[in-house]
Amino acid sequence: MEHISVLKDDVEKYLGLTAGNSAVDATLGLGGHAKMILEAIGEEGRLYAFEQDERNLIEAKKRLKEYDKQTIYFKDNFRYLKKRITELGVKEVDAILFDLGLSSPHVDEPERGFSFMEDGPLDMRFDQSSSLTAADVLNTYEESELADIFFHYGEERLSRKIARRVCEYRKAEKFFSTVQLAKFLEKILPRPNLKKGKKRHPATKIFQALRIEVNDEMTVLKEALEQAVEILRVGGRIVVISYHSVEDRVVKQFFKSLLTPKASPEEMLYRTHGEPLVESLTKKPVVPSPEEVEKNPRSRSAKLRAYKLLIPIK
Image (cartoon, rainbow, N blue to C red; front, side, top):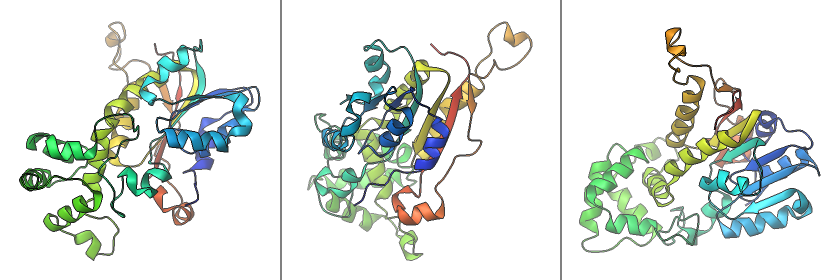
């Protein structure tokens, strides 16, 4: 499948890059957004690109070969964003992009275990060198842990029922494949959405929850956002594209705390909140146009939020 960058024009608009700027692409993927960034910052600019999936990184480097002198790559999780960049002696950058969606190879390659459209192992690791897989979660976690994961990360209202049935099933047979899990979930979950012509499969929420748990995504995202604003220059911009309400809520709440920070003891004499540390550039999240969704169906759930730093955060 052709690689299409989500909300590319909006990313370019809200990053507001000019020649000579420095930028971070915290989620390089196959390099679609990165190419746009590199073209904007020119030969004097610098891009710091993070990608923990080795196969994606190799492919992105091929696609961005002409920009090698401008780009510094990190095969690493973006939870180490500040550490890796400051180790280079860089104190601040002009812009940071987080595109939190799955890259095409993750979805299209059955052996990665992210999709139930074709059979594959229950893997779901972004970084193949890490140890925990989705099969490990299903086969070893306590019933209460599974219920919490399905509820909080998948927003599945039948989380307790599913967790109970998972634990019953695994007594006789372990979970090992994506299609096996999907068929198991089809038997115990209603399919009203499919009957109404909608595309959401009853396994979608559980697959999302498992992926988030395997990769510790919500903890990593919170840590990365905290680090991002610490290395952003005053006036610099941060753009985040999320794809489901769980991660969008983390982004929204994090920046809300910076828009209305706690007041200092002196400020409390006059007001409830301190001065805002960031400015929201998107009063409402930016979503893809119908034309973009038609061209790239995977963009349909994307929400872009953008902010500008007003006061240094250390």
